Length: 225
Image (tube, rainbow, N blue to C red; front, side, top):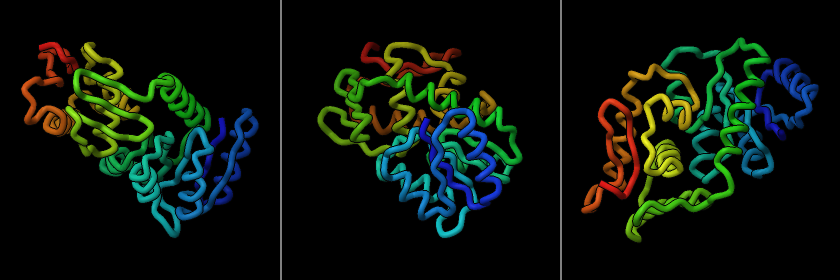
């Protein structure tokens, strides 16, 4: 994999880059948020490893700007901030995974492999359609009955996951692992909040409802009642 590592602690960054290089990966380094954002925007990397606290531009702001620009680059956030709220902020900003420092290299590599598999599983299909709902992964655009729908990054990722599992019942655990790639408590209400917002966005005002709750099981996106 071609990895972009943005870490302002040069000693820690060099150590991690050396370890990843020895495992056969190609690593490009940046040492502040501005240069990291510029490098990530080139679209030439497979994965971004991003420190949470960076000079010039905060790590979360880097994530937000990349997602706002339509980047789907998998992002692993590294941070010494281990509170639950901090992890949630990182994931809601558009990060795909969040690893607390200090970490074991083996765990970091395992998480990178998981992100790479997840991206590969997406496959070459760029446009997904369910009834009159259309999602374009490359243009990051959603349309329903010819009308553009504006979604947040996480709502877009949730809808894409559901559309790739059309007519299947997806559980809360499947959504947490497939969309957040993080093991929250399955009882957390983060899914309910995003499902509710997504349902409002894609179904409100339409006679045929596409997003359904399957009691005791999970959710399904289908044109069938």
